Every structure is written in C-alpha cells, then in structure tokens.
Image (cartoon, rainbow, N blue to C red):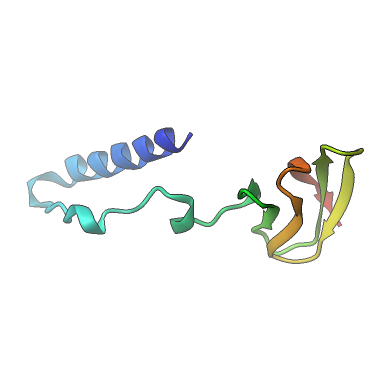
Length: 101
C-alpha cells in the first residue's frame, strides 16, 4: 500500500512539472515530499507493535466499533479530534467509524 501511495505522489509531481512547462525547476531530492505516514496526518485505525490507536480527524464527537481478538466488538466514544489508545496491538484486530454522537 505504501508503494502505491508513493507512486501516486511521484506521478502527481511529474505531471505538475510537465504542465508547468520549461520554466519549472525541479527541487533537489532531499526536499521532495515524503510519502511516509509520519509526514501525513493519519486518520482512522492504525497500530504499532505494542498499541492500537484510532485517530479522529474531524471536529465532532463520534462512536467507533473496535474489533477485539479476545471478545465481542465494543463501541467506544471519541469526544474530540485526536488520537485515542484503544488497546494492545495483539488484542485489537481493527476499528472503524460507526456514527456521530
């Protein structure tokens, strides 16, 4: 998936240079936009090797559904924009938006 996102960024940058004509000067490779998640705002479910998170990127209260490995799905309320720890990475399979509060 990261490869596809990086390819889209490169294709968009190349198209922009072609459309700009001969007056465009390419920036050095060091200052090219990064396709890594750390450089972009991550919204929704993600995890590292230890913890599972849900990042809410809108200015509203929402309910999410968390799919736990060790039991039934549970609803969790996210009151405002931000990232919420929803459990251990080994115990959480996925999480998704359900509805507005």
